[in-house]
Structure formats: structure tokens, C-alpha cells
Amino acid sequence: MGFESISYQFCDNPCNTEGDVMMWPSLTNGLFTIWIIINVQLLRHSNEAAEMDNEFAEFEDMEVEDVNDQDADDSDDDEFIDEDEFSKPIKKAHLQKTEPEVSPQLRFADVPAHFRSNWASYQVEALVLAILAVYMLNYIFGRTRNRNIANKWFMDVTPLLEEQFTLVGDDGTSVDLKEGHMHKETDAVYTIWCSGRIGCQGMLITLKLLKRQDLIHVIMNLIRPKQDKVIIRIDVDNNEMDSFVFAIGQRKSVTKAVKEKMDLSFFTVERKGVDRLGLPSSIVVYAEIFEAVNAIIDPAVLSVFRKYENAIDYFHFSDQYSGYKPSDGESFTRLPETSRVLFFVFKMSNEMAEIDALLRMVFHCFEKIRRYRLSREGKLKADKKRQSVQEAFLKTTHQARQEAAQARREEKTRERKQRLLEEEDPEKQRRLEKLEQKRDMKMRQPKMKQLKKPHIQIHLPEEIYEMTSLCAGATIITYGIGNYSKT
Image (tube, rainbow, N blue to C red):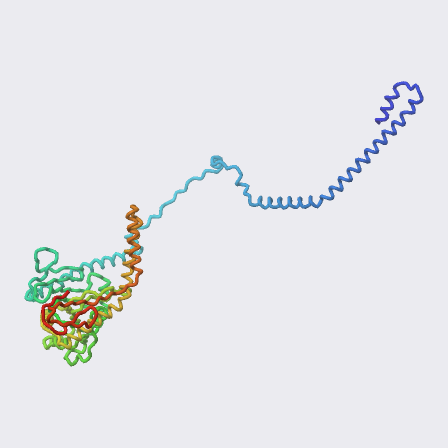
């Protein structure tokens, strides 16, 4: 169509010559040829681009897979997204308007019935209150009964004690002497202190009663009955008792005392053949020297043992009394101090004749022990036994004493070093360092004991002496008389 317009445009002008008419077809053919060439070139370029796209198709597939994987991950994450989380909050006012109004419901409180009409619900409380009431009543009556028993016993023995001691029943706290006082240690333990007698520092009477104020002990006493006891302790003066240790009494009580007390366990052994003394079969003797037993158990004491066998618990006489053994895990680092002590343990009785006989036997034994002295062989045997016990004790405690001494030395060294570190003055610090170094050097040096021979020189007049030297450092006189001086 374009060619036709062009031909018409050119044909509007008059064609004057034949050459002009022949020129138009050739021009049209040339333009058509150019158009074909351009189309061929465009087609060639399009084919080359298609081939290049095929060469990079592999890489495009990989990118597509990565994109697909990423899309799949995004889709998985979208599954855990809560759409309500990003939604806009709903206004409460709107909800209140939309929700229908509900009228409040009345609720009646469950009020329990009065306890007077429901006693079954308080059985446990009633039982606890009953137990507490019984315990309190038992405490009041038990304490009162123990006090009455102690007061009655003290009033019964006061006349006899006043015959033997100047002071009976001192409280031990006031400056002025006060008699007739019994000290209360606990609700079941009372003590009486007596003093003012030759040969002893004093006598302590302990009334160890049953714990009647404790309901549990009352029930246990029904299962395993026990009795009230009287424990008498006399502290003898140093020169009023010889060296011997022995115990006599009921087998169960004496065996228990031997296991618990140090002096009985170290010095005494069970003596057989006590029936020859005329003692009852229930009585056992643990003694260090048997001759002391023969001397003290005289006919007067023997008659009391036979008559009041059940009332006597045990007697314990010792010049090496040091208390009870240490508990498990404890030990003494040094030999404990000893004292001369007499123990008399009785079972309390309400009969005045029995109390009087037992107390008079106590004072008889005390006077007998004051006057008694061991034989020469017995004294040597007792001293040897005490020496062996002391050596055995020192041997067993040697390691403990060494450890204690080492601990004390380390503590002193630690204190000196701490004082050295805390010293601010440089001069004093240097002096302390020098002293510490000297002390360390002295400790490292081997310890040697130096012995010196005595040097004796005697001066005599020159005309009458003749001397001969027999040993180095000493001058001995062989004969001669004269003035001499020791230098």
C-alpha cells in the first residue's frame, strides 16, 4: 500500500519523458530487496539468541529449584504463624456491648453446725486435750510427791548427820552459814552438803528419785521397775587414805561401774572366793589388793551386808578416782587428776531403822579407811601398779600429745607470719624476717646433747701432798691431809 501511494504521488505530476516512467519499477524492486535482507538478518539473530538460552537452561533449572525450596520453607513457616497474633485487638467495650447481660446468681455459704451438736468431728482434738491434761496433772502431782519424799528423808537423817558434822545442809551460795537447807537440782534430784569433820573435806548426799513428774518415765517404770537411790560421796583428805582401789556390791551395779569409771577399769579385777568372807552370793568384789578387802569388811560391815542385802547397791573406795571414761571418739592428752573418794549407793527406804544402820555403816567404813595402812609388800605392789598404769597411759597418748604439740607450733608460726605481713614499718618487717630466718635455721639444725665432765681441783700445802692424775679433767688425792678448796 505504501508503494501505491508513492506511485500516485509521483504520478500526479505530468510524465513528460519515457525515462521517468521506466525508473519507478526499478526503485520498487530495490526497496523490496532491502526489506527481505533486513528480515533475514533479524531471523538469524533470533536463532542465535535461542541457542544461547538453551546453553544456560541448566543453570536456570537449578535456580528454579532453589526458589521452589525457599517457597516450600516459607510455606512451612506460614503453617506456624498465628493469624490472630497479628490481628487487631478487639475492644472490650465492643464485646461488652455485644454480650448479653447475665444477672448475678446468689450463693448461700455453707455454715457448719455448732460443735455441741457435732461432737464426732472433734475426736482428735479432744484426745490431744485429754493427754495434755493428764500430763500436766501428773507433772504437778509427781513433782509434789518427789519433794515430799526428799523432805521426809532429810528430816529423818538430820539428827544423825548433826552428830557427825558441824554443818548440815548448807546452801553453798550465801556468805553466812545456813543449816537445814536441801538444794533442788531438778524435780527428781536433791542434794545435801555436810562439812566440818576431821579427815574429810565434806560429804555430799544426792537423792536421785524417780522422774514421777514425767508421764513417759512413769509408764516405763511400770514396765521396768526402778527404785529411788541415795548416793553419798565423801572427799577424803590426802594423807587420810592409803593406796588401794576396790568396789563391792550387787553384781549388775558393780559391773556397770567398772565399765564406766576409769579407776575401776584400770586397777581392779574380779576377786573369786568372796564366799570365804561370809558375804551373800549376790555380792561381788572387784579389788586391786585383796588384803584391803579383808581389812575393811570386818564383822560389823558383814552383818549389815547380810541384813540389808537388797538395800545396798554398791560401795566404791578409791585413791585414784578420775571420773568416768571419755565417750567414743574422745581421749585424754594428759593424765587426769585423781582424788581420794568414797562412794556409798543405797536404795531409799522409808524404814528409819534401815536408814540409821546404813548411815552408821558409812561412817564406820570412813573411820576404818582412815586408820588402815597397807603392808610393805602391798604398798610396793600398789606403787608398781600405779607406775605401770601411768606408763601405759603415756604410751597410748603419745601420738595424740605429739599431734597436739605440732598443732600448737603450727599455730604459733602462723601467727608470727601473719604479724610479719601486717607490719607496715619496713625496718620492723626486716627485723622480723631476720628473726624468722634464724628460727628456721635453728629448727633445721640437728639436735645434739652436749655432756661436760666435772673438773675438780684440790689445793694442799706443797710439803705434804702427793697427787696422781687418774682421769682427764679431775685430780684425785692419794694421801695427805691439809686445807683444800673446790674450784
